Length: 226
Image (cartoon, rainbow, N blue to C red; front, side):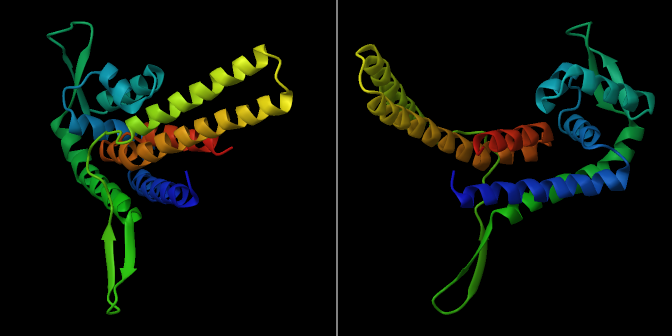
């Protein structure tokens, strides 16, 4: 991943987090609470298990939020006819009146922040300044799967050669050179995967209100660039 890709990611991340922080301050709700409200508005009748899957949060975090909103009359917990052990989570009329106005704005502003982060300005030959965006659509895709597989195959080939060299007692300097080739192949593979994740998965996560995935990506980038 080059500096441009990293700068683009952090720009997207900070802009979207600013939107959530603003609405958190405005509503007095945490980012996790906003995320749960957002997802129930998008998928009414979901279960708590489904919320855990969508938010990537453990049950211990999701349950208190659901109980709080149910206690406040924001959520209705309806018996699941397909599975008597779980409850379907829906907004009550009070909940819709409470959440709909700011959720609609939050979703629009988060999408706008993401679009702005992709915007580029160019100057044409006649001096006109043109601003446009390369924001991607709502699609969780991996465009470079073949490139990733090719690089992994190359890394495996290098690693097999290292093992063979060690078994044959080849000079350590030559082994280290071959290990450097393995490391280079793995790093290049990671760059492609991160680029795909930033350009596609990040967009989908933000559009779905899945801020847990955004946080996970931030941690992954931090780990990868160490």
